[in-house]
Length: 182
Ligand code: AMP
Image 1 (cartoon, protein in one colour):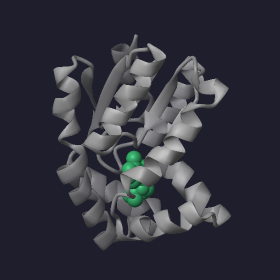
Image 2 (image 1 turned 45 degrees about the vertical axis):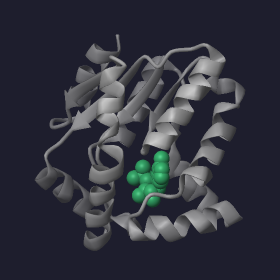
Image 3 (image 1 turned 45 degrees about the horizontal axis):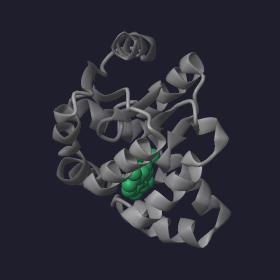
C-alpha cells in the first residue's frame, strides 16, 4: 500500500500514520521527522532546513526532495509506505508521480484528515513543539492554504483523493481511515 496522509498542521497525521504503519507493516515516512533529525545531527541540510522550519515556512523543494528520494531508495520502501507531510507542493507531487511511474506502482490513496481551524489551533497550542508558537502556527497554516491545499484538486483529478473526519478519539479516526484504505 502506498498512502499519502494529507491535511493542515495539527490534524493528527503523525498519530494516524503510526497506527497505519503498525496495521499495514509498511514504513512511515514523515518529512518533518526527517528534517528534525537532520537538524539535530547538525548536517548542512538540517541546518539550512531549520531556518525555514523556525519561521513556519516550507523548506525548499530541492532540499526536501533530496531526503525523500534517498529514503524511498531504501529496500523497506519497495513494498509500500505511508507518507506524512509530503508532498506539500505541486513540484513535490509531480516528483512523487515520476517516482511511482518509474517503479511501475500506483498511489493507492491520498487521505485528507479534516479538522476545523479552531480545533487545530487549540491542539497545536497544547503540543509544545518549538514551531507551535502562535505566530509560527499562523504562518504554517497560511503556507498550507496557499501551497499545499491546491494539491487536493491535483489528486482528485487522479481519483485517489479521500477525506475523513479528524475529530474524535485517535481510534475513532483510525477506523475511518481503515475503511477508506481497504
Ligand atoms: P511537520 O512535522 O510535517 O509539521 O513539518 C514541520 C516543518 O518541516 C514544516 O513546517 C516545514 O518547515 C518542514 N517540512 C516538513 N515537510 C515538508 C515538505 N514536504 N516540504 C517542505 N517543508 C516541509
